[in-house]
Length: 114
Image (cartoon, rainbow, N blue to C red; front, side):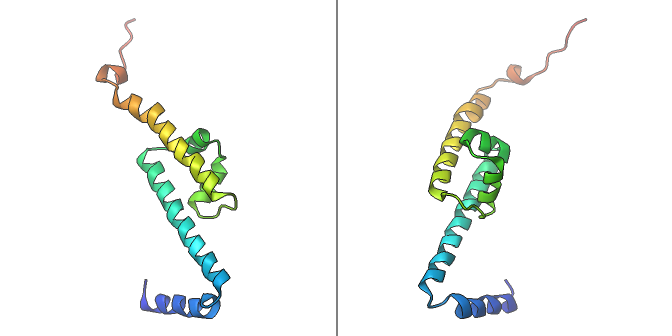
């Protein structure tokens, strides 16, 4: 962040948020949500899941996953996180572990003799 932008952020904080407990709490909550959103995005990508995969395994809508990852979710974050954590565990059990146990014969295409 440049000096100019950090000065602007500091000015905005002092002007609109500082000494206002409700706004300070709201800013802190937004920061926590952004941290959780980044974790979800990172884990989903490490597991090679699409948003659609995560939606299917969690029972959430793909649009909800997008909203969560963009910190723009208006629903119950704790409930959504529980569903997402369950989905990650299920994906690992159903997709990652079976793939890790495959042998080259399991993923080799065999020529069809005519």
